Length: 281
Length: 123
Image (tube, rainbow over all chains, first blue to last red; front, side):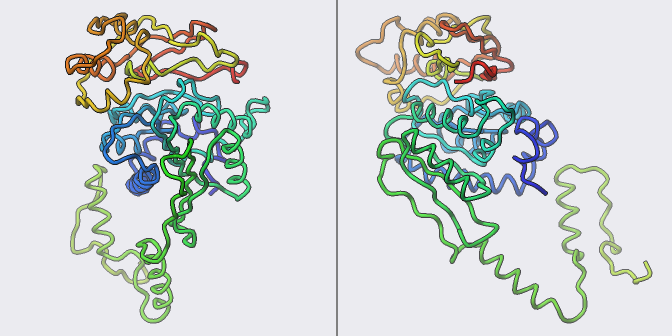
């Protein structure tokens, strides 16, 4: 399965169906929430100071809801109308704008105390048309220069994104630097394939602290521990009776989940659920 | 919903439109009032960033005359509360914002302004 940003432009990829799927998927909700909390941590806002933040690529408001909970006033921009529609339905408190960040922002200088962006920047790296203003460097430049001016001094902008290569990281950081930003890239769990997350931390001025925050390391991490445990279990499973991949406990849990989600037609549970059947079956 | 606080921070970003591109003129506005928690610290924090005349004008246009036309020297609690109401509790649901310089129209549908530019307007 190829990456989403290589399949279609974001406003088409995130149509009505995908927008709903993306937002109601519980695993995705968890991941997006974790990344939002981490981004807020990296944003290093002075404790309990009410701030006006910009959510870049706010989508259906998964990150915006957390900004609401944390007491921030915010404005969000996104290019996909279907995602913004879901955000409206979820009644997030932030002001929403249908906007293409590659075209730049119109906010007055020093409007925002900070900015976050979850899973967005990789979408700026593809050219949709052959018009010169559609080239990724042009769009990235327009984006970063207008963002730099829209942010207060000092402040930070934190971007979690999915780079597909080091060249992409290089391109983005060089254009951000040219726009005036300081800072750099912070990588959490660099040795784990699943848990690895890349954060671009940009500073305006001193960014409220000179040091680039450290990335999280793998040792005490639940994700890494789980991967190691899974590898060990796989090795052990080789011998003995073949345990069914989806045993009765798993089936019952899954059916309960479906019922909770409101799915229709979930069969009743009985003594026959998940019962071992003869091979001829 | 666009609140007046965000409208007060918004200028036009069309290519070449760099002077007289603020504030965006409001037209055919329908508003909705929604209560928001009063945070005096936030209001005092944001006060230096605001353009008072533009704010008072926009507020008057949508029917709120609680703000004085000139920014007062001292901000007392009453004034902070009025400011809070104007900034955070007035939501623009429908209408349009027009740039006074290049005349680009940003329509507002369902509370969401459309800030997308045509190809020739990209900076």
